Length: 182
Length: 216
Image 1 (cartoon, each protein chain N blue to C red):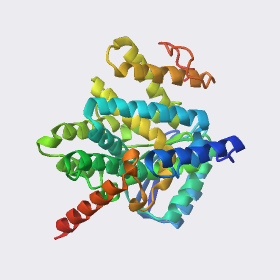
Image 2: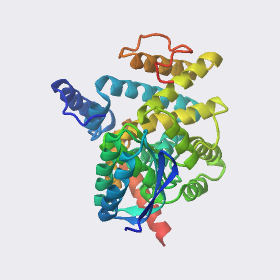
Image 3: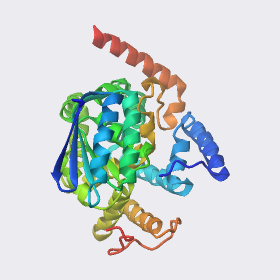
Image 4: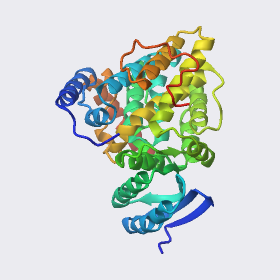
C-alpha cells in the first residue's frame, strides 16, 4: 500500500482520506482502488473529507488522476470537502471539483467548515449563491447606506434565477423565499 | 456544470466578450469559453454586472488601489493565480500612477505565497502592509482572511463587503482556477489601466530594479 494516503471511517457514512508528502499518479491510482469500493458499500450517501493538511505537492499527472477519481466519487452521489491550509492546495481541490463536474465538492481552510458543509445539502455553487441571497436580506432589514441597493439587487437577481427566471426584474427576494434551497 | 459543447450563440458571445475585454482592458479574456460553458451567457453577464457594482462600492469605501488589492487577496486565499496576480498588478499600477511608488506585495511573489501555509501567508501579507500608508489595508487583509476561513462572523458593513468579495471571486475562481499553472508574467492587469503601455513599462522597470535590489 502507498504511504501517501490513509483512509479511515470517522462516522458510519463519513470517511477521511489523509494525503501526505509528494503525491504522484500511482498513489492516486491506488487510492481509487481502495476508496471507491468503500464508498460503494455505504448504505447511505457518503461524505468524504480529503485532508490535504500534510500534502506538500502534487504532480500534474496526479492532479489529472484525482480528477478521474472525483468523477467516480460524484457518480456515487457522495459529497467531498477538501481541507487544506495552503492556498495552492485549496486551488487543487477546486480544480478537481470543477473539471470532474462534481457540484458536491468544495475546498475549505478548516475542518469545522468542511464538516458543517458536509452535513448540508447545497452544492458548491449553490452555497455561494445562497450567501448572496442572505446578504441581500440582511441589507433589506437594516438598509440605509448606498451599498444596500447593491445587496438588495443581489438578493433579487439570485431569487429570480432560482425560480428559473433569468431576468433581473423578478420578485423582490423577500424573507422566507429561499428558492427551495434552505 | 457539464462540459458540453457551446451553442452557436454562445460561441458568438465568447468572441464578442473577448473583443470587449480587449477594448476595455487590453487583453483577450482566455477564461471566456469556460465561463460560458459553466454558467451560460446570462448567468455570466449577471456576474460581470454585479462584480463591477461591487468593485465600485469597494472603490467608494476604500479607494481604487485598496479595492483591487482586496480582490487580489480573495484570489490569493482561493489559490487562484489568474485573479490574485491580475488584481494585485492592477492595484500596484494604480498606486504607481497615483503615488509614484511600488506596491508592498510584488505580484510575481504570489505563486510562492500560495505554496505556503495560511498562517505564513497571512504573516507575510501583514508584514508587507505595514506603516502608516497601509494601516487600514493591514487590518482589512487580516479581517478578510478571518472571514474567509470562518474564524469570525460578519459584524459590520465592512465585513459584509469583504465577505461578499470573497464569495464573488470564489464564484469566478470556478473557471479561472483552470489557469493555475499559467506563467505569472502572462497574466495581465484586470482593468483599463492595463492598456496604458507606457505606465506598465515604467512600472516593470521600477519593479525589476526593486527585485534586483532585494536580491543583493
